[in-house]
Image (cartoon, rainbow, N blue to C red; front, side, top):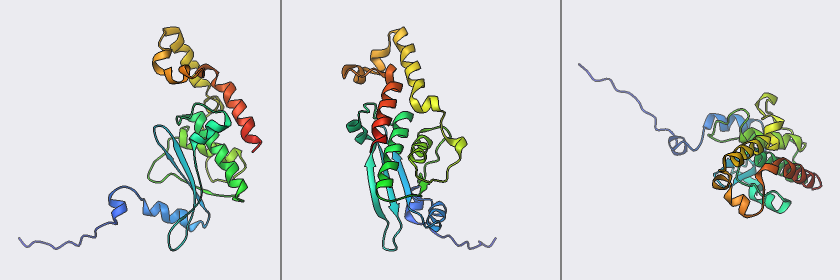
Length: 193
């Protein structure tokens, strides 16, 4: 039996390592608009507006969700209300830099409908920036305001387990059951930016 020769093309290094989806990147770049890149970690979220240049992408704006502490928001671990407020804040930063329309780029992450990535996108849309995202992908208003967190902490308080899960916030005199009220106050502060 004669062995057949096959040609094998080695993919780009960033594709092999799972860092870049080149088809998705090419379709984003064809639009000619700047893109918003969001990276959510376990303790913070980072967003950047990136503009394509031939000699390398240029970061126009960069911000972290932990900057919301200065605006009165203490629950900065990236949950849905934090991501929404961060998106709203980031959208205001885009307005200051005269950016009106962007493309939402999640990189290789496949965001879930109603999740943190789409809460961030909803915040950007509500701040007045144009972004092509389906309305059905956004979380409900109840989840955006953190009412699900308040209900969960109330249930933990009844069981006597609240101090185990939220000890960091309780020690700093922040009540997670009042997250909706704090959300509204922080949103008003962000409106005045």
